[in-house]
Length: 119
Image 1: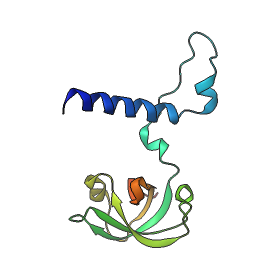
Image 2: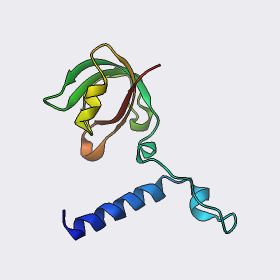
Image 3: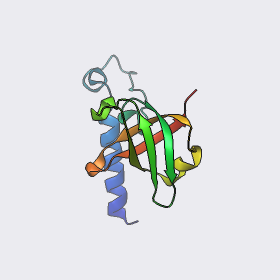
C-alpha cells in the first residue's frame, strides 16, 4: 500500500468517527478536559436486527437470512441473501441459528457487517 492510500484510509476513518458522534459532542465543549467518547465503526451501521440463518455460502461470501424489519434500511421482514463484509463472519453461524446482525447497503449491495448468535 502506498503513502497516498494510507492517507486516504486515515482521512476516511477520521470522517466516519466524526460523523458518528452525537451533534452536541461535535459542536460544544464542556471545559478544557472534555473529550468525545471513542466510537466503534460498527456503531455507525445502525441497530442490530434479528433473524434466522437459512443458508451459509462460504464460497460465494453470502448468507441467507430470514429477518425481521431492518429499520436502518427501511426494509420489511423477508428472507433474502446478503453479502458479508468479512468472510470470517460466516464462521460464527450455521443454518438454523437465531442471530442478531447489522446490515448496510454500500453501493446498492446489501451487506451484513456484523453478526452474533442471539441470546
